[in-house]
Each structure stands twice: as C-alpha cells, then as structure tokens.
Image (cartoon, rainbow, N blue to C red):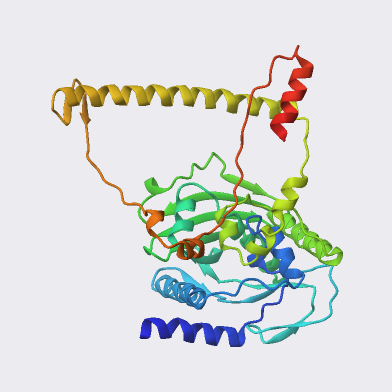
Length: 392
C-alpha cells in the first residue's frame, strides 16, 4: 500500500512545481551531457515524462547532500556559503528578455544570465577555503568513476562555479568534488586546483573512503590536467542557441543502443528516423590511418576465429578423455579439468498462442560491422564489382 502510494505523492508534488523550461545551467555544461538532447529541450520538444520514482531519486540525492554536510560540520572543517547563488556570466548570444525567476534566490534574472548555486565552501584549520561540490549517484555511475573514468560534467560545473565566484571577489584556487554512492554510502573524492584566469583545472588526488588501493585512477606527476573546461561549456551553449534559432540538430553524440540513449527522455524521437538516414548513407574512401584500423580488425578477427576453432576442438578432446575414463574431473600437473552438468530453461514458442507471441514481440535496431577482404589490387575490375556487390 505505502510502497505504491509514496512514489505517487512524490510525483504529484514535483509535477505541480516543475518548470521544464530550457536555459543554460551549470549542471548541463559538461561534455558528457548529450548536446542533441539539450537542443531538443531548447527547441521545446516535450521529453518522455519522468517516472514518479525519478522524483524520489532526486529527493534522495538532496537528502544525501544534507547528511554529508552534517558529518562535515562535526569535523575540523568549517562549512559555509551553502547554496550561495552566483551570476557566472552573461551570454552575448542570447537576449536578456524574457527574464526568469530563480526560486532559490527569489529574484528575477535576465534571460541571458548564466546563474547557479554552489553546494558550499569549506575552510580548513589553516584558513584555506575550498569549493565543495557534492554529488550522490547510483552504483553503476559510481563504479565507472571508481574504475578510472573522470567525471568531466562535474569538474566542468566546478570550473564554472569558481569562475563565477570571482565576480564576488572570492578567488578560490582549490576544490573538493565529493561523490557518494547512494547504494553503498561509499565516497570518492577528487582534490583539484583551478585557475580561472587561464581556465586550467588539475586533479591532484583521487581518494576512496575504503582506501586509495580501490581507485582505478593513475594520477601522473603534476596531476591530471583538464584545460579549457569552462570555455568549452560556453561554446556548447552558443552552439545550442545556434541550433535553436536555425531549428536544426547536431549529430548524435552516442551510438545506437547505448545506455545513454536508453535512459534519454528524447531517445525514441531522436532515433525514430534513423533507418531512413542509414539507407541514405554513402561510401567513403578511408585515409591511411583508418585503413590500418580496418586491416587490424580483419587480422584479429581471423586470429580469433582460428583460436575459437582450436579451443572448441581441444574442449571436445578433453571431454572425450574424461568420458572414456568415466570421470568428471581430471588432474594434470598444475591443472584440473572439470566436467559440469548444467541445465537451462527456455520458452518453447510453439506452446504459446500466436496472439500472445505477437503482443510480446519487441524490436530494437542495432548496427553490425562486417569487414571483408577484397581480391588482389591487380584485379581491379573484379575488386570493384565485389565491393559493389558487398555494399548492396
């Protein structure tokens, strides 16, 4: 009863106060955010409605931030300036009208104002101030960062905030990006420095709450450098505005079937005409570097096929050896060969009524790469004919 009721209440309250209007925001400024999705949003295309559970997830993230702030207040660090509103920049490529209302700052802002709210500033015992940006994310995303990917969207957001703070004579040079795994309460922390005058961010250390050994990042000497994050963000927003005015869309940022597209609110619309686009695609002459990639793919594919055949042959030989000895385990110096008996379940489609089978069918498109060797260069006519036949 309550399990069904609570998400509905969360969704109802959120939808009453929801304002799904596009404007440039720090949270949308990073390179991982799909540019095409933002262009759809800026042009007023309605996305797939959020589920009620999505609003619960957002609310959970806010409370995780509050919990973390409470723990920090019990430490030697001083935490202040929480949710401080900052005007980061004014976009010259956007009009100042119509204005929009910031519900946090409770004030009207020009339509071309790049505005945001920092999570907090922390001050250590040596009176050094640092920007604190907190994120609470799911286990899947957290694991990607733990394994060594860098959260470029979040680092770009930090660069935007630290640039904007200079408008208030707050020249921070250091920052802490603190990421929490909402499933396990594990933390991942990025200690970085940033020079707003040169737009240069350096990740100096990555630490996990369960020890540095669990982190897949290898920080080079001098830190992991990320130049131009803020400038790239401004350029992206300008590009979105250009597409909005021209009513055009950029190329898709992710391939067909990617998890980003599966979760995207515009995913169905974005890929709806791809079959026609695909049919209209032509042929291109590959440059030398690209041709080497194709050649390497072909050679490795051939090698894998041969190895696969050898593996299957050896597997049958070992099975036969064990069967002839009425054994399921075979011991060899340094090895043990084990024959397991397993079962698998499957649906017999012939036993399912046809009308049910039809209703259960789902279609998903995907791309398949085939690389095939053409004949020797001396047989040009045959080569050309075979290439054309293969293309068709």
